[in-house]
Length: 175
Ligand code: HEM
Ligand code: HEM
Image (tube, rainbow, N blue to C red; front, side, top):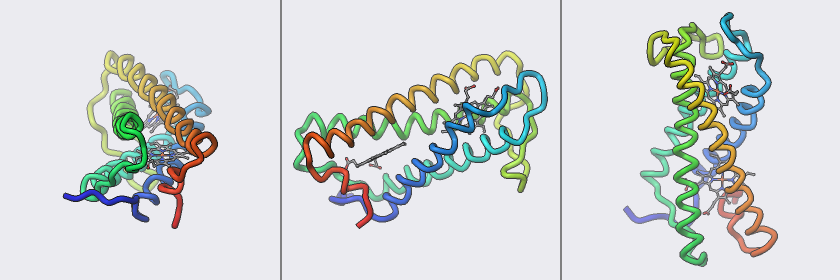
């Protein structure tokens, strides 16, 4: 399949939709009360519902990326082409890791939760107190790794805007 030179509208909508959803999801994760042994509340329902929305959107986005490949900007030096592609791959992988570890987390807790109060949430595994501890660590590691790689990605975008003063940022902007 021949790669396109530019991101299309669909790829741009997917990109900024994920940014928006993560801007909602991280604060909910940090601010929601610790559940400990009790019952999960509304904040947890919203956290898992937004989380599963993110999982669905990133899966669709990845499929779109695979059927509509976009070539790296040809004016970039090879090390930047390679490193940006590696960072993009890592971003997809870490969003998947964060959402799937979160879903396993809620499953091992044995909670019954709904998707935005519309329908019961299917669980991936049955309750397991020993697995909860492990998966808690994984969810936290995935969240933080995702945050660090996002910071790197955004910093690189700003370096292109303010230091190289090239048009890389335009590739992901409308028009
Ligand atoms: C990219 C998506 C996600 C992000 C950025 C995210 C972020 C966070 C953050 C910041 C926390 C608080 C720190 C911690 O205890 O680890 C957290 C906790 C948690 N998240 Fe997520 N999360 C995501 C997806 C999900 C999904 C899809 C689920 C479940 C379906 C989920 C379930 C949980 C659970 C059960 C907790 C722990 C609550 C507790 O025991 O106190 N997360 N998440
Ligand atoms: C202010 C925030 C952000 C800015 C300014 C930004 C900017 C950009 C730009 C300019 C590109 C195109 C790079 C190129 O042409 O090589 C891009 C691609 C990409 N961005 Fe962001 N980004 C931001 C936030 C995020 C976040 C939070 C994620 C989290 C998943 C993300 C994931 C990606 C991915 C995966 C690609 C590659 C797209 C693909 O090839 O499918 N970005 N971003």
